[in-house]
Every structure is written in structure tokens, then in C-alpha cells.
Length: 318
Image (tube, rainbow, N blue to C red):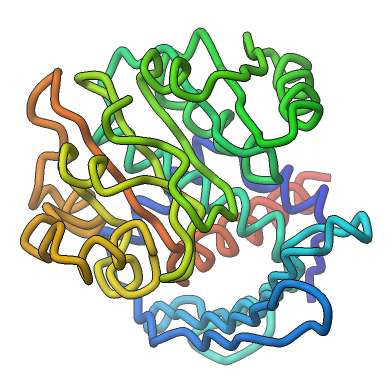
């Protein structure tokens, strides 16, 4: 059985190819059962979460991700997300690969946001604001840059030192990136605002969004968490990765839905609609769009298949 560590998983998942793989999986045939989502108490710390996410293509590949999210792992200099993905044959059941789950999750999440932005952001979007400084931040920057002509990257975080470090790492990767202190000003100037935080209260205000802006909400993966306010969902045309997930787990939509600020009719489309051409996405240059994702098992399966096949080709070529 093939085993890929973090570095090998990253190298096997270049963003252009991964974005195409995720798109094909959304547009194709994939069975995605309801994922198991279990809260785990951690005495004296923030609660942890265990996720079990299965998916399969009939007669193709099958897989399951086991993922542990421990928000306070930064205290131990450990990653927040720890897990593995087990890929099997959907024909024989043979176990084919064990793939590092944290890197797979980070890259497929970023690829999904970039895929959505291809339909929803302005084609000439050149200024991206990254809100958050965790593992996803650099992945989101690189994924969006794979599809949009980004010339300026702003990085904001609650911890200025972490924002500086993230911006420096982005510069080393070839991006024109700077840490910023004023979140409002940065939001007002950005074409794409990508949020990947563990915020429980809104960070981005709808009043700050300029005409034509695209708001990409990746964090807030429980109903109690939130990265944007009511005005953001009022002003924006709303899209989601999957309706079943985003409308039940993403606090950015669950809370305004419960409060009557929006209704389910305000959700214009999901990625199934966008990738199959049932909805065109952005219609006007000055409209504000919002994409809320909470993650779907088919994204993991798409990434796992790509990583396996890429690694197998490299092995055969070597």
C-alpha cells in the first residue's frame, strides 16, 4: 500500500490539477453519505471534533477520511488538524493508499474555494485579502492565484506577528504580500476576501464590501461560529459548496437563517449547479458574491485519487 507523508501529499497535489479534479468530481457521479461529526471534550481546553467522511465512485475508487480537529493544539506546537485518508478500490475493496489528511484537507479546501471563485469572482480580480494566518492561509493564496491575476496580497490576523510571518512566507513563495492592521480598509479595497479563522463573532462587515467583491468564507464550520455579519449576507448573492452541509453547519448562514435575515431561497446555487452549468455564477461586474464552504467528502476523494495517481506515475517514471 502506498503511504504519502505531508511533503509527498503536497507535491502530489499541484493546484491547477487539483482544482480540475475537484471540479470533475462535483460534476460527476459520487456517492457521499452523511458524515459522522462528533464533539470531543478536552478538559481545560476548547472542545475537539472528530470527523469521519466517506465517499465513493461506483466501480471506481472509495475512501474515508478520519480527521481530528483540536483548536488548542497551537499550545503544543502541533497542527490543529490531524488525520489520514484511506483510499481503496471501488471494485475490489483493495486498500491502495494512506494519505496524510491534514495536507489533503488544506489543499482540497483551498482548491474548492478557488474553483468557486472562478465562477463568482471578477475575472480581473487582482487584490486578495487573506483573513487568518493558519495553515489554510498560504494554500488559499496559492490556489486563488492559480486562477486569478493576483498582484497584491494583504494578510490580516489577530496576532500581528503571525500576520507578518504569513506575509513573509507568501513573499518567499513569490507573492507581493504585506501584513495589514486595518481590517476595514483592507476589506474595502480587496477584490477577493478569503476568511479561514476560528472566529465565533463576525470579523468582516457587509458594509465594507465594495461593488464587485467576492467573499470566500472557509472557517466557521459549526453553527456557533461566524466570520461575516448579517449585512454581508443581505448584500451578497450567496453560493455554497453543498446545501446540506453549509445550511446546517456553517454559522455564517445558519445564524441569519434562524434569525429570518435570509431564507433558503437566497441561496442561489451550489457547486453542483456551477460545475454542471445549471447556474452561470457571477452575472454582473459590480455584484457582490459570497461563497460559504464547510467541506465535502467528495473533495477529499478527488484529492486522494489525484495524489495516488500522481505518486504512482512518479514512481513508475523513477
